[in-house]
Image 1 (cartoon, rainbow, N blue to C red):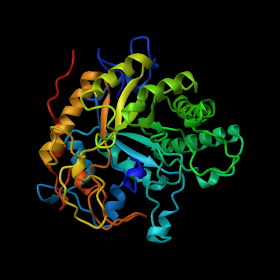
Image 2 (cartoon, one colour; image 1 turned 135 degrees about the horizontal axis):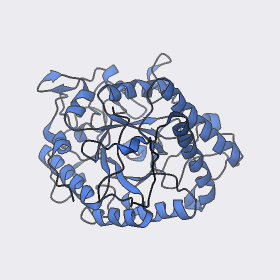
Image 3 (cartoon, rainbow, N blue to C red; image 1 turned 90 degrees about the horizontal axis):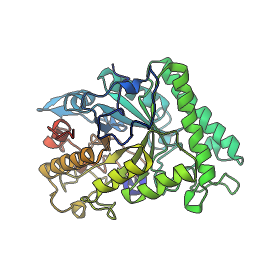
Image 4 (cartoon, one colour; image 1 turned 90 degrees about the vertical axis):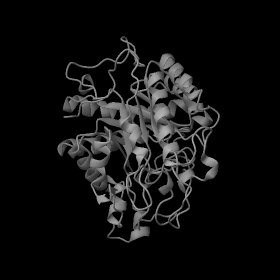
Length: 404
């Protein structure tokens, strides 16, 4: 999710899917031992980003169903979620400014391990989202990790990205916690690590036409995943990620043809209809269908959300307000549910392979960050102001029409 806006058995999963798959028979190949050979039950990803949950629970947040406290991972699993998305920051020691030096470093490596264990205990797959930053990475903020900020050679930077990615995944492998999916970057519209850099830091912004340099770094991250696959016999799904469907055609064709990045499986994007207005809700399926055909990759919504109320229950100003409604979907639990059902059906019809909801459990609690205390998203979760599950979650278990 953009911090601009926020201020911001399994191991078996996903992409070899029936006739409406974006990838043709001549597309991405898999090895005989590929985990991708086994499909999810629904042959479609119903994903939820639960990166905030540990922090919320550490600071008095309680999740309930029918008025009774319940494990939130279990709630999502029982209502149809089959993948958990988790962000990882290189070294988020700025969190010490918020909670003091004895704090957990949320979205750091140890916190991520805890979350992966919880997801796998429920039989859900994991999408691990490498931000390649110590803090939020999004279209306007792609800050270099402090450990890398004095690098001046693109080869050194690429090796650093490779070594870091490989090390994280290798340590997870040792603990039987390998993710089924990995994102190389988060909302990388202009690229990676291009915000407030030192003068001699390698230039990675494609908005300044640095396609080749960005491609080298992305390929290093992808190679680390593939080398872990070779070591473990796994076949990890690799995704790239941009925000706003208006960027899909330009970005993915550029990243393939100009940057030389071809080893990924999923072209991912964020879709928040309030902010992403140049592609209408009704036109979105055609954009996705055309991208599938043009680049021969699977396409997936990696982030979306919709508000269910205008109520703000804490001092952390909500991001979504009354202007966030789009035609046909009032700001209500039913409006949220209907939007998500229609969006998901549209994506299935267009040949996309999943929809992930960004932070559906970021309820109000005593958690805080550098921008507020509580939640800036409490009116866009699938829980009410008391932490009780709402009917908004029903979109995950809805009886969708599957194309033959």
